[in-house]
Length: 100
Image (cartoon, rainbow, N blue to C red; front, side, top):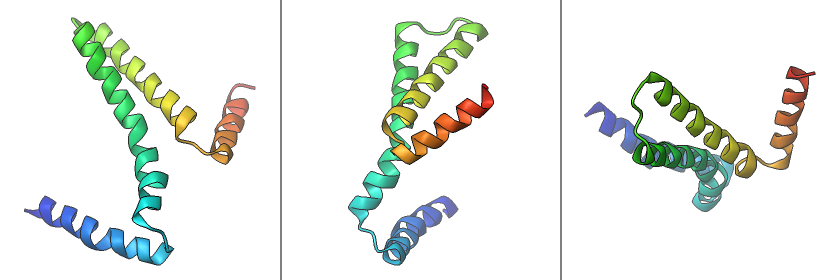
């Protein structure tokens, strides 16, 4: 019951309240926030499901490798499709500082 109340209150009240405060429409919110957040997760989940269907893991090593592959798909979609140019520049500078 508490989960239902939390979901309904967030979707029904807080989202509308935040949209009104920021002056954004739901379409802008969906494309700029929800889609950018859900696309990497959906791509990673699809990769994990495909890997499980193609070759089910028979041990811990295969399970770990499939997790790494799914995480790589997640990161590729996140960096390639879900970051704006400013965010990509920040990620690039972070990698340059880490590996220089």
